[in-house]
Length: 458
Image (cartoon, rainbow, N blue to C red; front, side, top):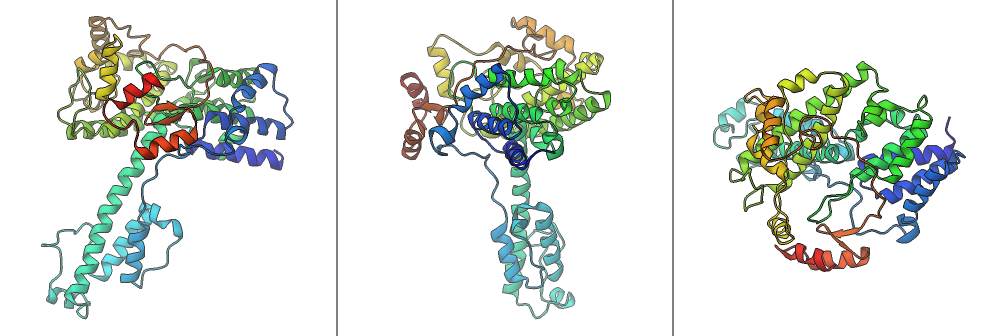
């Protein structure tokens, strides 16, 4: 059994799977974990961890960063529940976290609705309210029309709030999964059974959670030299490694090759379900932004670019895991028949301008996407998108379908060099947290074209 200090570090690492800690801070926690367990890492791992942990907040900024260390959480229904408790005194007391629990909120709405003769979902203010005779028949004749209307309106607003809360919770889950895959779903026992597995999963997840940088080039790859050093430790102790946990975040053939067919199918079912959920979000955002031009994917007024880009990121992550699992299971014939394409993000006009000004242009993948059926139509069986069609469209625009990840899992990339996490203001890197806070408060870099100019001179 781990010693008490090791248990503490493992729980901190497990908690980080739902937070947005910097990779440097996770590297520092891994060092503390190894120290608590009296593990002396090999020289390569020790050097990589020290290189990253040298920039940990506790050593540099004494725990201060201008960036939030959590994903944005939806506002719960605490205020509405408090109002319901005042208007419906017979409601049982609720714990403090009930405002974030949709099941408890719905139960309150239903229970309170019974007291005023209202069924759940009856929200039409003109048709669903009870008149005086109906209130008397329902046993609430002593309740004035004004007091009845007040309670009816509250429950109607609570149902609308519940719908928004469910949507935002689902959207947050999409964001977290899109960035860090399924790491956050691991139980503590799965995560902490092997310290080296825990260290690798926590660090790679933190790398995946890094914010996008405003650039006209490629974003940083999550798998860097520190992650690779930790992965070499898993290779050296493969019998002890929890490869199933590792596959939640790193679905390369070497990892999936250690899994049983049952474990592969379990992961495939989860990713298949998630793909369909994300496809629904993409379709909804597409339908609400009817003027999206597929051949350019430039944001226009009225586009819900936040929802689209979050869903596109999640689709990319889920699709990559799905392709890797299908290939490992030998289900190539499925991909021959159903090969949904990639989904690009919507690009801000200032980024598009920066690309053109620097001599670049649209990525060829955008043209491939534009010529293929929409992914949600493919998953529902409304449009056919076999692998042969994807290969034909890729050839039309000079795109390698395998290297580009269109028809097969992407080739395993070389580890990226470690670079410290920058402080960002609207995606633009600045000198330090104090400068970032000042610029963010002043609203700098938030206007159209300002970020591109700032990125050139910072």
